[in-house]
Image 1 (cartoon, rainbow, N blue to C red):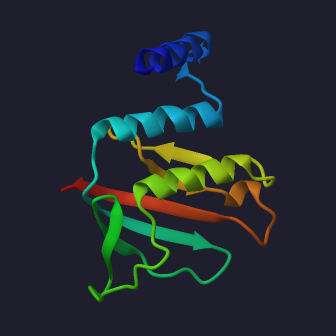
Image 2: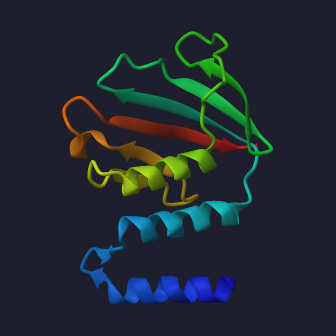
Length: 144
């Protein structure tokens, strides 16, 4: 199965290259990067997370993930503990990218980490009505 997946990826990339490199549809790009992330086998990690939109944004937090579950979070600016309810793992951020791609607001702008494949930035604001959309940033991911 893995050989078939990589063969399909190769076909897509050869058929869609231009002078700047391969171009994938957002759904294929998501699948390629999600496979890259899963191949790393990283289940314990820490990363900095921020979300902003047209609403008052919560402060950026440092999230600790153990066995693919959020275990703790601290507010970066103060070091105070933050509630973990609703905070994402990298796997749940891939799901957010998928929902954003399928939304009616237009395609999001996604930036992926070139080494590990996780989404570093998800921006739906540019494709949203003035009162909707968000930007998520992920920085300083460190496997544990």
